[in-house]
Amino acid sequence: MMTTVAFAEVATPVGLFVLAVTEEGLVASGWGSRTRVGGRLGLAEVHDPDRTACAAAELEAYFAGELREFGTPVDWRLTSGTRRAVLQALHRVPYGTAVTYGELAARSGTNVPARGIGSIMAANPIPIVVPCHRVVAGGGLGGFSGGEGVETKRWLLTHEGYLQPTLLDL
Image (tube, rainbow, N blue to C red):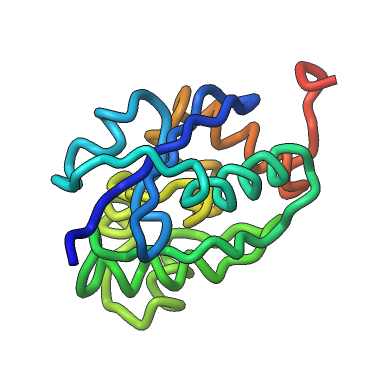
């Protein structure tokens, strides 16, 4: 059986967000174009709104403040080994909380140093659903490569209640 991918685009408060869904589940997501998000997949694209409907509805519910845990199945094919172990541990970090890079390394059972965890976060193929925005530095927010960078991370952590709103948010 040939694997295919279907795409959905969802307008969010932090920019246009693209979802890529295979027969197995959500395989990639991110800001930008379908080509940018799905370019590394090498899968035939199909038009299948039914396949993407659940993931798109959950993302919309998340941004509306109505969803705290994604139920969309994840297709982990773009990860393996240590990266997969770290991202699967991250997938279990609850809404409204955050972990440091070192804490995530410990939770994953890997011996990846904090700097290596940062590299894995930067290459996360499924941001928001696999919540790399919930990984922070010991002394601050740390980096973020999605959307508008650290400002997007700050917005997501404020949306989830981990950070308090600033005067700019009011």
